[in-house]
Length: 541
Ligand SMILES: Nc1ncnc2c1ncn2[C@@H]1O[C@H](COP(=O)(O)OP(=O)(O)OP(=O)(O)O)[C@@H](O)[C@H]1O
Image (tube, rainbow, N blue to C red):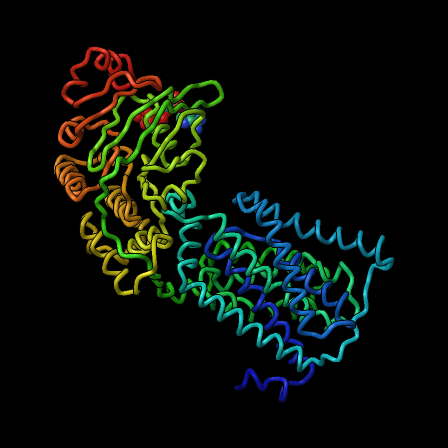
């Protein structure tokens, strides 16, 4: 009530401060909605904010205010969709540079438009909006951004975003369409920024590109979100309040050194408070969204067939015309010396690499040209030779991430129980709430398997899943794979542990220099002189 009634008892200066707190709260929360979980550090905030302000300046005097706000939302969303589609494949520093460049590009385009079409660089916006009304509009928008952030965090998209931030490759192979999820939330976040710009526009009366597209706004928003903690919904607001007050003091006392102080504050925050103030208070309770129940289905139709699959890397033919088929319930072994193309072959099956030629079919579906998340959703799961878990997510969340986009959502309880069943199955029953990054190497491998199984796969690709296990762990691991086969799961395993190949595989193929040199029962192929020669000539000798 005190916050809502604030304009009634605050003086003009305090109301202006309240407005600054509110608009930075919206911008920082909207920024953290996308950049917090994905860790794509965007400096494009002011691009959307400025577009919103300009939309209001252009339409504000001729159209009803709700229509102006809707138009600003539309312009922000459309710009985010166009730029996001082309650039959200970038990550790390490339994305940061792009986002900074985007703000400058849009500023230059607006200047060009104003000079050449509108024939005047600035615009006046005379509106009946008083400071009180502006404050209440921002308050309503802040409530909406928190509500949206809360719903997003609870939805499967919230966990999907965090999975993408933790390991985008693993997320894609768990059935998450990373590009679409990132784009959707980028657009949502940009829409809030644009509407904030429109709501703020009447405050200035006169708007020109230097005001509306002031790059300092983007940096301030990043600093505020990081100080508070970009990883949680209410983190950014904890950074906004002290920094708005500090910037107020700095602008009054050190107007010429403002940028230097801003830079120093930024460095201090990153060094001293990498997880923000909220990180000091404690990790916010995380939510495991609903997924579909994970049970392993028995399938009777022929499963995977590769015909003449090749993959070349700039002249090197890593996989050369490989053909094989896997029948349901079978474990196919792929063996061969180091560098013979086994992992590359698995990568073509799972969509991580597009084959240069040949056809791969899962059931009746041709997999060529499909993206990893599409193949994962068809029921082809995988583990990685170099283990890939999503380290900041808990063990249970890692498993839940793989169920987000499989089938109809189940109730929260049903979902959690099935995650528990899977974790029990792989021997991680007691570790649900542990961060995956804290697990031992072996336990991370188990978690990868549980995550693969959470996709309800028809086929699982295991890339040296048994490597590095001690003899008793190996025995347990072999028994676990046998259990999965007995439940009807089909498995392709690349393995150097020959005892496991003998114990588990009905058939195997032997690769050397990209080609299949032998195929058949393990004992037969391992006695084949060609195979012995390949191993003796290879790095394993
Ligand atoms: N992305 C890539 N770019 C260029 N060459 C690659 C790439 N990936 C693999 N190769 C090359 O392709 C060949 C096959 O590699 P691959 O990793 O598939 O072999 P492997 O049989 O899985 O080996 P290992 O048993 O050591 O894992 C190697 O010569 C490797 O250097």
